[in-house]
Length: 231
Ligand code: 5GP
Image (cartoon, rainbow, N blue to C red; front, top):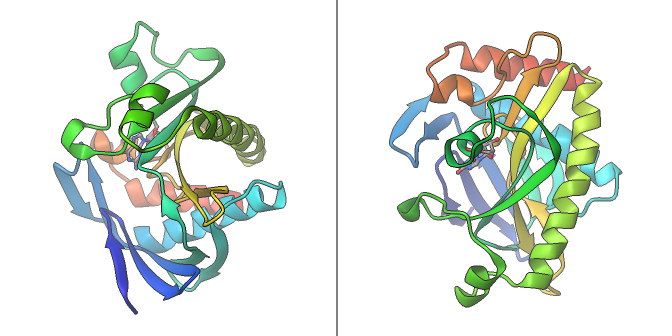
């Protein structure tokens, strides 16, 4: 299979003209790749979690790149032109938000915050606006408005789905791609690497913050997320 792209935790292969195979690897990294490790089994768990969450979005009419799961750690997806933006949606203030703005840690936000960031480690994924994105040739106002509408719908769907499984969706990051007709799709992955998940009862961290903050038991909590959403 032809290799198209190797990222920090996933590898993308060409399947045919219109489809790709995305392999979820056991690599984990943080702080723009400065901290790196391998966690056995993470790739398979993340491929499974991503599949379940994309299936839930597809069921709810959200256009996503996801087509099907391939045992044990891959998904087949639509081949798209990726937009180099990280679109973030937050329900609770934490992480980089409280480092950059005077929000108190763990406050429930009055309404979700959507942020656009440039996907570029060299610049530490800085927040970007419509004018900067347009001038960089990355996106435009109309497309960013559509991405904001989609991520807010995704937030409503996943927040409810996860809450019913005992998980609070604190915040998450999406990436979007476009087909030849410029139609937008949610792409990439939706996993504990790209979302903050807290236990609904205990507020225990069940996501990559366990790795970022050396809290331990990373794989055990990822496995627990998978167990709950599979039930
Ligand atoms: P924060 O801006 O607070 O660091 O992250 C907000 C949310 O977006 C978190 O759920 C975090 O996991 C996700 N996120 C933001 N930037 C990145 C990134 O570069 N890579 C990954 N995997 N997730 C990110």
